[in-house]
Amino acid sequence: MTSSRVAVRTTGGKAARFTAFAERTTPALSRLAFLLTGDEHRARDLVQQALERTYLAWGRVADGNPEAYARRIVVNARIDGWRKRRRETPADPAELWDAQISDQTSGVLHRDQLVRALRTLPPAQRRVIVLRYLYDLSEADTAAELGVSAGSVKSAASRGLARLRTVLGDESSPESTTQRKGTAR
Image (tube, rainbow, N blue to C red; front, side):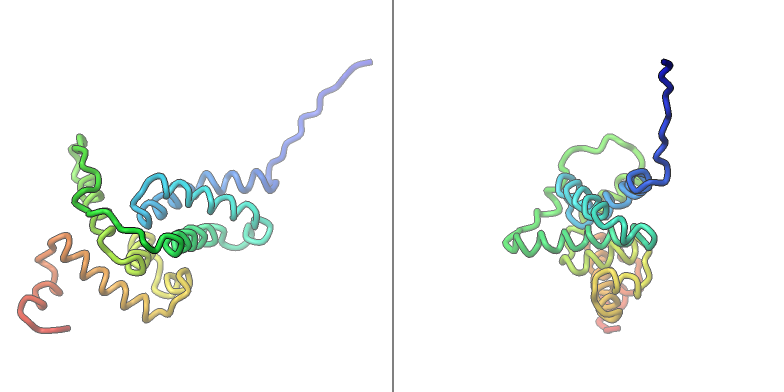
């Protein structure tokens, strides 16, 4: 009696499709989570939670836009975290990452400055700035992602960008020049 082996391939199955999705989107979800939290450990927890919930709903979301679904989970999970820890006090941006940066590239320094500046924004403005400008979503998509009106997105983006210009010391922008002269826009 000869025993024969049969190779079974599971390409295209739920697990294989989700694994490919997770490998493709984890870096972007990690960046989003880190920019929303400012903490690497919390960011990893948010990404894990988003991937877990996306996997559970994979049958419903796989044929639609699973990236948007996972991003929404990250944002909602962060909002839930804020609600649970209302007494959370953000760290002083000057105290974040005190270690010397050995890399000589200016990109790393600029990114570090941006993350520090983002930490100074209120949570609603930070969410809008991250989704609108770092993820390059339209105003309508950002509004849908956050469940707010497009006007709220515009207002939060305007205020957030003005605050970032102040924190980053962008004196060459037209808005800061206009504000120094005492005229309002």
